[in-house]
Length: 266
Ligand SMILES: [Zn+2]
Image 1: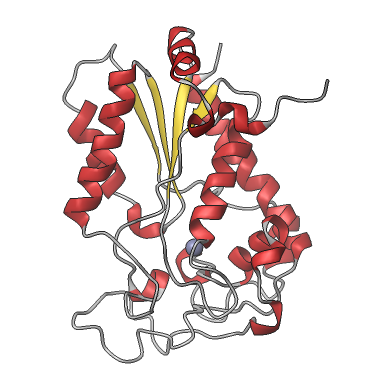
Image 2 (image 1 turned 45 degrees about the vertical axis):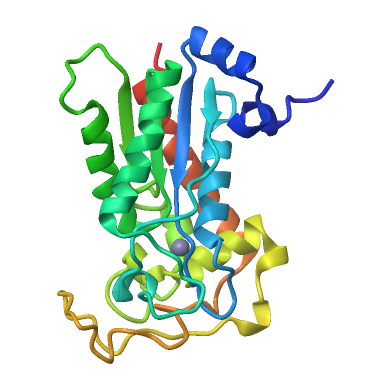
């Protein structure tokens, strides 16, 4: 027989007895914490959720890690990292709700008996708030109890020179250094989607666009010039499935190494 299908380690496909057995042998559990957010005219609102879920599944392959149903709602979209809330379809939680939802989920994992819990963000705005939720649940408890690993950025600090050169041949997105935030719905994320879910990419709608100004601070009410009508924060036009595959391999590898180092080192 071939490999075990990945679905077998997904919580929603398991029976309660299989979950009990997983807890018994000290398996971990991982949750992608993502968003329902506009991703330009060419990518679906579920982009973060699709990428995040597949990332956790791929990184968990061969590890004794149950993959929980992805949380597809995240914290409020901000103009300079996700385009902001003004787009139809972008559906977000306020910070207090988000923290409560994530904390409730962690509490349930703890109740099942899981002792290795990983949260993996694919939505920049979720950073810090995931930590807060984990802190609420296990922060004050003494060591020796369940541990929560908070992976706020699953991307490697740097891509290999080959991948960096392939994805950003001009050295950087059109504005600012290659900040992942400004790559929202741009060449990297679009390439990842062309690699993972080409059926969902409107390739004829890929454009280059960016905010008029990125001043290094945020401002409310949101001024004109901070938001991009298209929802694309730098350039999407150079995206290809090949670039996506190169970057994907490194993102999965990096995430997997983090999980292994903390939970599965002998
Ligand atoms: Zn995204």
